[in-house]
Length: 368
Ligand SMILES: *[C@@H]1O[C@H](CO)[C@@H](O)[C@H](O)[C@H]1NC(C)=O
Ligand SMILES: *[C@@H]1O[C@H](CO)[C@@H](O)[C@H](O)[C@H]1NC(C)=O
Ligand SMILES: *[C@@H]1O[C@H](CO)[C@@H](O)[C@H](O)[C@H]1NC(C)=O
Ligand SMILES: *[C@@H]1O[C@H](CO)[C@@H](O)[C@H](O)[C@H]1NC(C)=O
Ligand SMILES: *[C@@H]1O[C@H](CO)[C@@H](O)[C@H](O)[C@H]1NC(C)=O
Ligand SMILES: *[C@@H]1O[C@H](CO)[C@@H](O)[C@H](O)[C@H]1NC(C)=O
Ligand SMILES: *[C@@H]1O[C@H](CO)[C@@H](O)[C@H](O)[C@H]1NC(C)=O
Image (cartoon, rainbow, N blue to C red):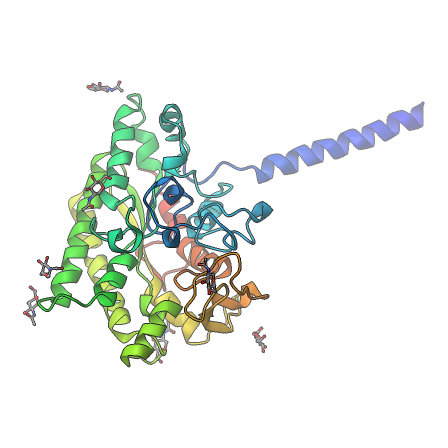
């Protein structure tokens, strides 16, 4: 009898320890909710619900998701979790909030208290971007308006929730792709084009601020000319930079980052209580392309996609690489889950090299 009771006491103590460990792990996320806007780098399935969106702008078929739980092709343009998921995980969530277009109407307002992902593959800063390639996208204005109209329908007294939540935006790459890949306009002026992108960004940020948002994590477009698809164009047009990438496209990315920086500085000076963190994907991409080995990331294949390649896209019959942790690119346009995990880590915790003026962890911790 006594020995039984002893055994129960031991088991009981062990259960208490487990319970403590579980509570310790299940900490509250750093922000109440996260709202995601932008393109395929952060889309978690919105495009699946666009009837006219073409298959090349969807990722709801194998081999997408080959490393996602249950190997599910969810609409993420990745082999596994994408940048939105991985940043959400750093903040203490399981993964990205659900895609807006997957939500039944009655669940939208309750879901606002946890977060929603509005991002759409193929979309850009300009609402006209994406139609040529995808036929239909959920453009930035529509993403932002969906958020602001949901905020308006929330009960009064939820201002704190929105102002302390994180707004995460990764967009602009598709505008650069279209500008360089369809060089049909003889009167174009790069500076004016980039200024139009920045003006559009500013407009979207003001709308979000107007709805009560205060904490913005903004990612400037990466060296888009280094995607396998753009490397091919660079070779065809003999317009290569020092990385063997499409010079014209990378040149735009490099100019855009400081322009976004000064727009954000100006906006934060004008709008009381606005805070931001600007991620420098150009610098982060250079670091990797320069051959720097980062903790837990040894990318040895920088120019070829893991899935597809040779001009073909990624699909269920395309060749698939074995060691997905050593590839920078998953398909012709998108990073592997391993690459976006390095980016998420830097956005969240970088001490100041690639994230200005504060990182996302610091942004999340700010109390209004
Ligand atoms: C942006 O999306 C909205 C809503 O779908 C649509 O009405 C509008 O025409 C789109 N804008 C452009 C320029 O395509
Ligand atoms: C919130 O309050 C404003 C002004 O007090 C009012 O116009 C609006 O209808 C309220 N919204 C809701 C959803 O209760
Ligand atoms: C050509 O560029 C000008 C100036 O940027 C713009 O106003 C016009 O809409 C463009 N035309 C086409 C066909 O893209
Ligand atoms: C391009 O636009 C900028 C800004 O409007 C202007 O200063 C510049 O002179 C233009 N460049 C050319 C080559 O037209
Ligand atoms: C990468 O190398 C280039 C060329 O040597 C240099 O200009 C750049 O600053 C380097 N960037 C990083 C982040 O290491
Ligand atoms: C990175 O991977 C390559 C190829 O597998 C290997 O030769 C190299 O030693 C690795 N470097 C580090 C620092 O792990
Ligand atoms: C599937 O991918 C392969 C390799 O990229 C490509 O050759 C083939 O055309 C693709 N099939 C379809 C149906 O798109």
